[in-house]
Length: 229
Image 1 (cartoon, helix red, strand yellow):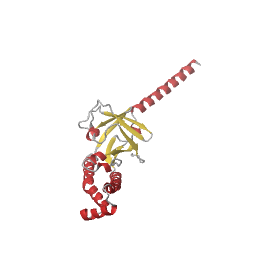
Image 2: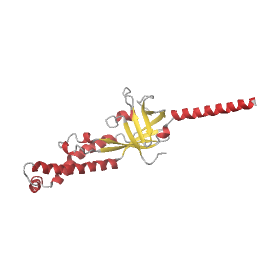
Image 3: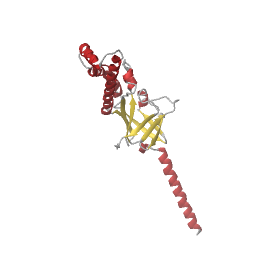
């Protein structure tokens, strides 16, 4: 009887210890939560429109660049840009910019008593094009180069692949060169949302230092549908 009680207590103790070990292990390595592709929309409107003289057309019109962070199960992280989605955002921006610009041109001339017919004739004689063609030409020659230059800057980091590991809610990143081994950002996964934050007192290194102007923390990302093995 006594031996059976001792044996039962030993089994219970082993089960509790096993459960604790599993719990601690799960807390220490939470990398499985990150495995897959995550994307963020970065608003770059102000950077693209810095040289524009018609900012009133863009007050409610934004350009977003779509950035993907991919965490692989082998401990590698890479960063990429979804050029197709980014270009779709830019094209939508130009369309809204043009529509707002057309309204603004007619309203401006209209305040001086000029009709739409007069404005159309003026643009035909002065610029040899319609109001819409004039604005789209402006977008091609003034806005598009700004956007292309920005995308070229971002593309310098798209081939980047660095090592990562997790411990509790800390994401450690290293490029094997200048990044301190204890550098990390904090992360939290809630459903299909990944939130990256950091202690403001800790200097940035690695990919976040290179892209600090674009990937400012805190940064919220959404999980893509496909997962990466």
